Length: 247
Image (cartoon, rainbow, N blue to C red; front, side, top):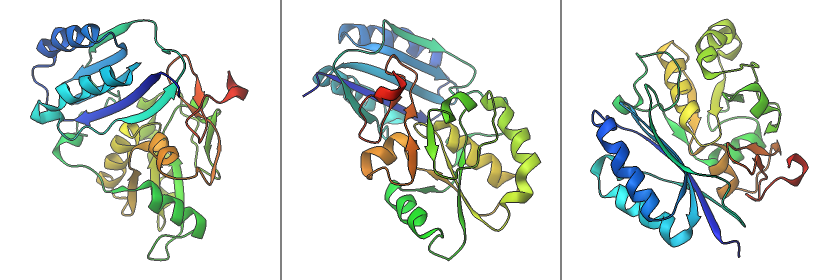
């Protein structure tokens, strides 16, 4: 079995003490000999960590003792080596930058749909109400190029701050359809789904846990290629192993 557990997770929750949390979480991660990146902002936490399984899970257990992080649900994958060179904890204005301050996921999520349900919808081509289903990739163009859902809508954005304008330019094309927004781990598609609902698109869902959870909980059907990840592995296949063709 591969020795290194890799996790990604995020939680939208108010963190007025983000600056104070930074040295605490850094010391805790270093004590457990973990590597990766933790982003903190007033809107929540976003983390990518790697290390021996017991240490990684101990860090998550300690994090969950703070009620604000109790619902944290990491996505897991394994590797032979640690795909990060150091441990960083940073304080940002947003844990995923959209430059749209009215979007506050901590105040209420857009409806989420499970990986199994998306798999079933894609197989049928329609949702449970018989409405046509489309998948909307909210990632940057170079990530999409590594792999995406078959037939996914891709607006070729180069950074997430471009998403609101891209949506407004294409909103009419989505009317009357069930739109499943997706991304790597859930954080971008959650913000995207909230924006689209707030701007009047009725049938919008986020893929719970993103592509990584889809790989974890299904056979990866209707997805072509790998999932780009922001570490030295570069891309993972549907089996959550390194996609060799992209290495």
